[in-house]
Image 1 (spheres, rainbow, N blue to C red):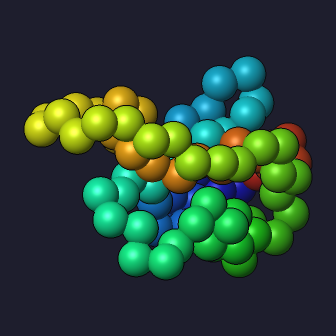
Image 2: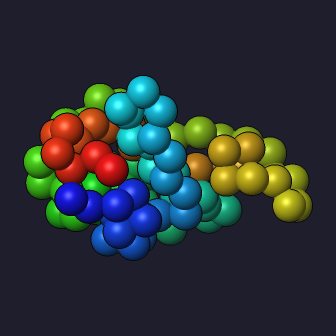
Image 3: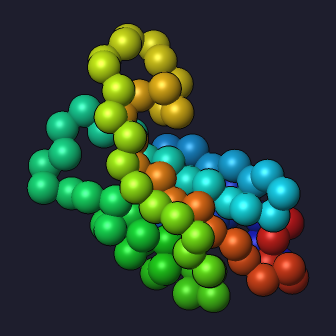
Amino acid sequence: MRKLSDVKDAIGCDTIARRAGVVTVRDEFFYQHGRTSADLVRRVMLACPDATILDSGEVWKAFRGGASTANSSHWFVRFTLPHKEAS
């Protein structure tokens, strides 16, 4: 059984959270450098090949120093893991 902290380390994202069985990972950016949310989806699928991707995308926010990842520009992926994996 994997812990969310292990999944976060395997994906290499900034934040991870689980609510009602749905895991959300976010990766903050200031400059995109040619990356997209598809790159984060690919990292999720490499780290968790049994994940079911529900949603992914990009959120643009004006820069605010000290803002949380959720309140900054970021890519996100929402997915579920088989019950035995979500701990």
